[in-house]
Length: 367
Image (cartoon, rainbow, N blue to C red; front, side):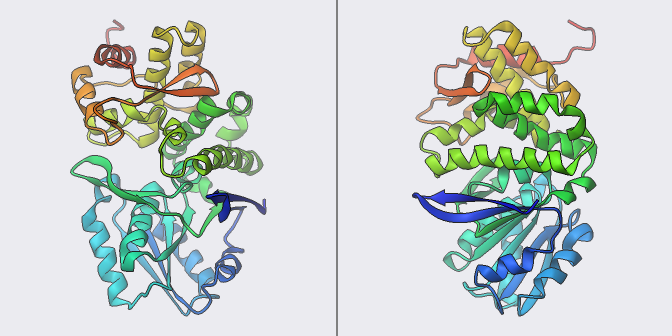
């Protein structure tokens, strides 16, 4: 452990991602950012707070003049402007000014809400990401995307706002449920599928160690996943082009997520979306049939679904077309030329989407 990678913005160093196995270097890192003697608010949720809030608070008390912890309700349904308003109220009541610091301690929901709050409170206050889920460590904590959902539509309100630091404590992954861990792994697999074939096959070769949550293997996996995302966001920080590749699996995945009223985890829907996108790639003659079904089958040993029930293909098409990623009434789909070679396509038809959804539909009679 103890490794650091830097994320640049406009060819200048912007923030570091630290890879550790505990919280012991957090206070020093925050002090080096210039927050000695400042107020610090730890924003966490009702799942993560009981596990790690006290340990982080104890560490940050070495550097902050006052350290507060504020818990929000856990769950995607609380990722909204009402929750942001409550955090504003808390910060105002504690007299936070623009020189103070917010800490996002939690998964993707906490990171997105805290980042959006930081971007808008007093026109911008600094924040640090301490992601505690595999999904947040490998995806949502890197790149500066923040936001909240609006009436069920994901991330419709948000801002690009970079953290001052991302602090990865790999040991927190030990407390994730099997389902949460698998959900995060979908984003890891996605990074291999879009940008790094060698990494994709490394994941398969290290399947057992990943399942056993070997810290050395997990650290290497999280670091490489972050490097892939970093390289993309450095070239395209505000999603004008290449960054859209990171949405592989998300177009249909987000639609499934909403269609099922968020009963499925985000990563489970991303896995289904990846399979659907691979299927469309195959039907367009871009990848071999064997490659398509290998991609599908490789989600199975990592405890991710390859089929879904109670989804209407027509509804999925409607939801896809209401997604924020629409561009001039065109669906920007991410397809594959090969494993590790993704591209943006705007020619995917409604019928192709429906056929791909039917491909991942589960029928009890086996039809």
